[in-house]
Length: 127
Ligand SMILES: [Cu+2]
Image (cartoon, rainbow, N blue to C red):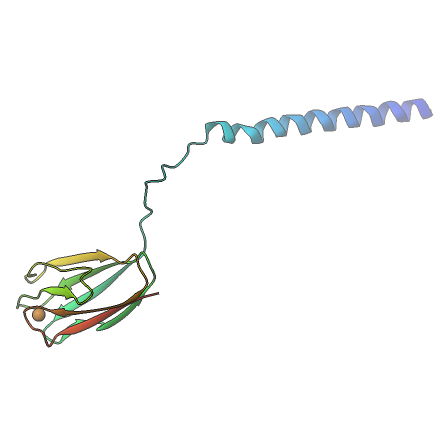
């Protein structure tokens, strides 16, 4: 009677270790097929939009995280030309419907103005 109990316990232990070994083998498979992502690939960061119209830049002050790409779109009939005071970016003269994008990689405050209408100014705060 006692011997039968040991035999049963032994069988259960054997089965458990076989299942354990099988699941171990399955879990190890993805590691083998895993590919390394090239370090040169830059993940697309968040984006933000500034609209240019006859009233100026909207929003005039925009706060973003490092890595954000800001796209200015001219919705005005007149041409506008973005110029960064820090020299980080400068667009060509943008006609209505045209856009200019710049990705901010450094934290800081970036004032800018319109070279065609210098009274138009804005600020991008990068945190
Ligand atoms: Cu302008």
